[in-house]
Length: 187
Ligand SMILES: [Zn+2]
Image (cartoon, rainbow, N blue to C red; front, top):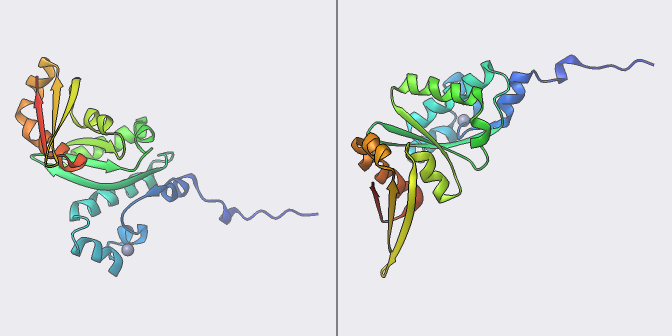
């Protein structure tokens, strides 16, 4: 009795990696650069920016070349004052923090000539910790009547000195990502 095994039915490791990565655009559209109407709509409606298209394309290229980049989901990017935040789906971050994932972020940083911060959806404090490149000492949320919420974030003095020039950018990013009225970062 012969057991016939079709080699073609076994995806190569690189292909498998590509399958496990979720992107906001069709992979075929990213590869060919010719966007289908659904992908075009996403940009036209303002759901995604050209930059998301570019980032998605880079992630896909990297996943095809580098085998073993783990399963993850790229959601979108947000930009403020030279800081580019890449938002990934829940559970993506620890997979992304592998040596290959770090290499990918370095490539993107070089490509876009921007500081890149990587976060995943979910826990607020974790988002803030990943967003601000300094040690956070405390978080204090104050709720005022009329749905006004103020979040005070205290960071260590050394770290504060380092990030001071981009403080406004981080505050604005946290406001948008977490959906809070007012954010203040101080030492
Ligand atoms: Zn498409």
